[in-house]
Length: 163
Image 1 (cartoon, rainbow, N blue to C red):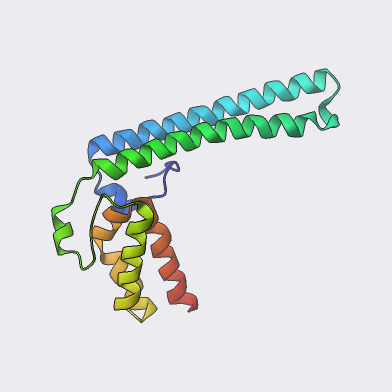
Image 2: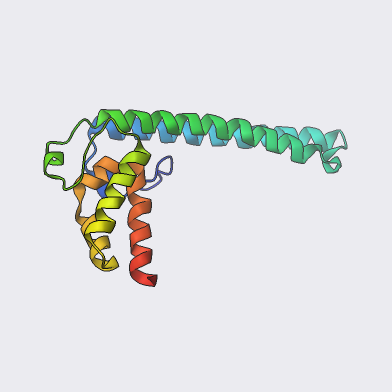
């Protein structure tokens, strides 16, 4: 999906999401975009006020900018975390998960899921290229790992290329 940066999903992961899930992602992305626009507007106003008062170069700008950016980044992170929570629990247990060669338990944290999948692939495939190709073909892992799937796939790709 073009223009979606609130979460880090592969095109294959987006393709299997329901319309409701895609709508939630779109809504979260629009919230993020609106927050970034509001942040830029607030920064412009603050900058103009400091320039008008003759204190722009006094160090106030750096402090004000950091405080405003921190406030908006916290709000964006809240939107992102809420979306990930929704996606994590709206998937349900895929019936294909019963055929996965590793434990599939949606009640586990993302970190625990990642550790299970990674342990399986690293034990099962010693050849980095085969490991990468096997994970790329694993649609269960893409669903099960959510946003952690893409970084793991990239990690195995780098191992394949650079050893």
